[in-house]
Image (tube, rainbow, N blue to C red; front, side, top):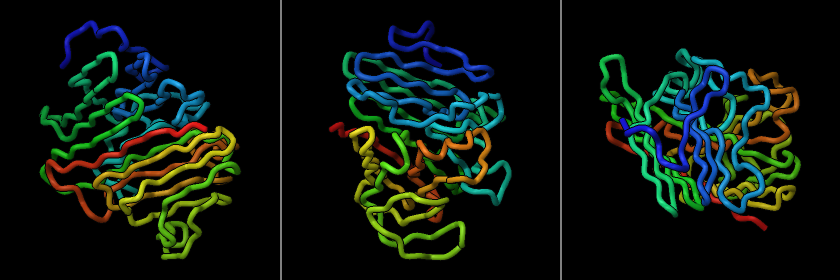
Length: 268
């Protein structure tokens, strides 16, 4: 564990029942929940709006998944087991390392099992970009996904670029041809095969592009619930968010293997 008190630029706070680490640095502002090692907010200097979306009605209740930011789905993805998307986002992680200087902030969070064995680590590096790197340390193969919620001016203003023309639609359980670039106009839950090309969210309302680089991912998942009632999300919450997830679903992670996502913003 790191020494305390934390240096200038890092401090702890609490939202209802959830303990959080706050980054307040000239280059970046960020907030991370210790439950789930979940990045809830990332706003690099010069970026007028937060890059990540967080539900305005999120109750921050201990043991319940937080709606927004970058939940870590691990060691499984989906609803075939309980809890949905694994237990990592409902468990407390430890801040195991940090480093801060005038140019960047680096953090590391560790997940321990009941025998105090480290199951996984998440490293976060913030400068003008944001890089999240997940390391699987368990003995058994596992799935993982960075279930990233991105903040939009409005869904009507957003275009997803860089995705393939084919995906598996989880709503119909069928492969289908889709447009690329793609606008979201309905309930979407699609799994794409990851390619070396980054995914770009072009948002004309915020006059910016969010560039999402998927590193060692095998899938990219796009999700928006549209009018479907969704826990801890307001009736119109879908209008200002879209999830673009970097995942290892079918190609399981082996012990000591890593998956990363790198985020950057191009402001017009």
